[in-house]
Image (cartoon, rainbow over all chains, first blue to last red; front, side, top):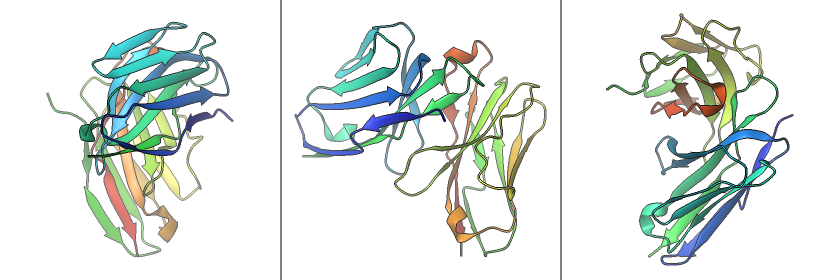
Length: 112
Length: 116
């Protein structure tokens, strides 16, 4: 079936270090979205990428959509304790029901 | 404006009982999703409603699970004869109308279900 995998599953960094999570789809995506879920909270939309090779930045966060539109990455520069949470990518497949398929998530822990 | 709301926020039930979870999407949102999230795990897709189209039920784990949606408003997720493995947070999300590949999902706070 349609799968969207993320690596790593979990990462623990010291405050100030950089962090990257990678998202890989088994099929080509129409778009990729990223969500953040704080501990005990619900997922909150961060950004959407639509074009092949697109790069978008939000302050310390950099999002990239691969040229083949099958992978994406989220990079956080100089992590802060407020970055703690689970980051999910979600993509709409080019075929099938057009529903959004969520990745497996990367849990980030930042120590002060 | 009001976001997605879900009720109850917490539900404790005994094994074998039926439960009904409710989701009120954002007004005007045509798409509605139900997900299950077990502790420390990712989002498990359950069912997707889009306008008046037939729902995508491909994620429902067994015939004990069913969901209904009245037009483009309230949705209820029903779990019959609950089992302990049904314990999880059940999240609802809605999306505004438009191109399917540009919808942002707005999540409700979830219902935490505990089956004893």
